[in-house]
Amino acid sequence: MGFQQGLSGLNGAAKNLDVIGNNIANTSTIGFKGSRTEFADVYANSLYGTGVNQAGIGSKIAAVAQQFDQGNLSQTSNPLDVAINGNGFFRMSQGTIISYSRNGQFHLDRDGYMINSTGQRLTGTTSAGALGDLQVDFANAAPNPTSTLALGFNLDSRQSTPAAFALSPAATGYNHSTAVTLYDERGNAQTLNLYFRKTSNTVWSVYGSLVNASGTHLNLDGTTLAATPSPAALGTITYNTNGTYASTTVASIPVTAAALNTGATALAVTPDFSTSTLYGSSFGVTSLSQNGYAQGNLANVTVSEDGHIQGRYTNGVTQNMGQVALVSFNNMQGLASIGNNQWLETYESGQPTAPQAPGTGTLGLLQAGAVEEANVDLTAELVNMIVAQRMYQANAQTIKTQDSILQTLVNLR
Image (cartoon, rainbow, N blue to C red; front, top):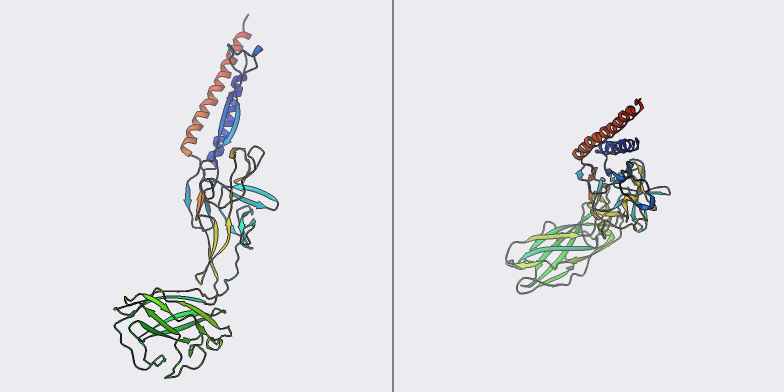
């Protein structure tokens, strides 16, 4: 007669309640992975290896295994909160210590590094192209001078050829005009006025003038725009008989430094009029794009689903500042939990895969402005707690019964 079976059951039930209690306590912990208690029966070694009529000597805890199934994704108001939708771990660094996490609650420190609540840095492919700590550059985006211009428009084929050309803001002699904003190398906005004058049924001439940053109307060579100037045309646009674009002789739109009047160097803008048409309808610009922009301040930072960290600036420019890298393990349950939603690799887990971009292979994609909730089913845990409580009570009852039997034997006369 022994108490070992009941005692092992009590110990197992108590341990099971510890695990259940830890799961319940972490239902609000972002990135938490719940655990389950795995029991095993215990038998004494029998003589000659036969197991007939063995009652067993109780139970034991075989393992407390974490369950790495996906938690629900919850939206947040922080664009740097990142959830992994699928397989993978964030790779975090703190000095020489590398750990792994599913908690994507990140923010920027004073140096622009993406860190978690304990100061560990998120790693990935940096802007230099190497694996390292991801850092956001707070510097302003430098201006970019305009070098290309794509302009789509329709010229009214019903127009007649006007009288002598007079390129002046208040003059006539052209059929249509439009204004385009250009930028010099210092980020100053310059207004390019383009004038279109019908030469024949299929050929139109193109002229240009500039309103610089000082508001002065000038020819593109910097000379004063007279009332009746006769500048050379920039070139011509030729259309097919059906009104579609055929070709142009406008290879470049040159704007001298004198015309810019900002100290910036001259501009040479390559135009693209290939989407223009010559139809019997009113003039109108259908598309406009150019590759220049002014200086911009960093407005916000976002993370794309494939992990690119993008800085968005007040001038409309978006720049990549690095890319989050994820890793995976052959045996996730072999990872060692160290608290703060962190794991370390062990011999049992195996080495992590080489850090790769989200969506590569079996790795999941990222969702910015969201976090992964704990994968704990609170209802199931409460039911498990009831079962563990009854298990504890039942094992205590077996000890009580054994004690009663033993007392009966002691009282024999």
